[in-house]
Length: 180
Image 1: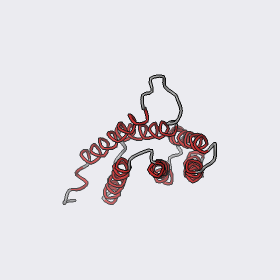
Image 2: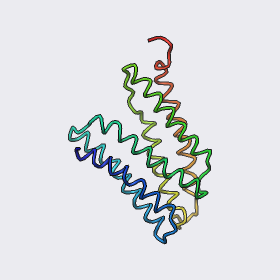
Image 3: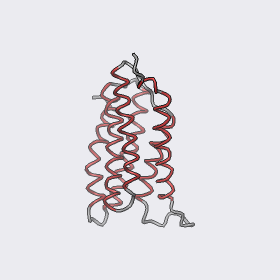
Image 4: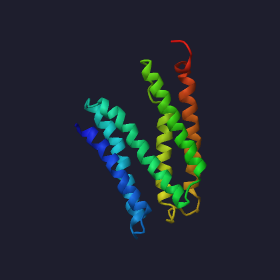
């Protein structure tokens, strides 16, 4: 297993620790969860960078990298619903987009069509990561104007999730055509 894939696998392994810290009653739980999430997010950047730069792109990495991202984000969102920090309808929108795009990709792959990620998808991912970090920072006085940045990013991430899903389907609607 190359370094890029090891970083991806590490991200998967960090998910249970992140959840444990976030949901625990430990005095350092939320800070620990923030640190684990930041480490996992950094591995997301570096695994892709290393894989491309050093020609380490593998089928395992193509499968596991997006799965690791989805596991991490989904774990955070479900924990936030349990903690009352995000509305369940936001999580349903975000998870629905992920299911739709994943199934759409599988249908395309069955027909030998490879669909590349778009910039909207990248914006969506970054906005979701920032949203999660801001929610984790929620109880800290980090801005002098007391603007609820976590709430603003919930709206931004939800909007970009919808836009990226629609963009993905509209640009590739031929995948759903009845003829081959």
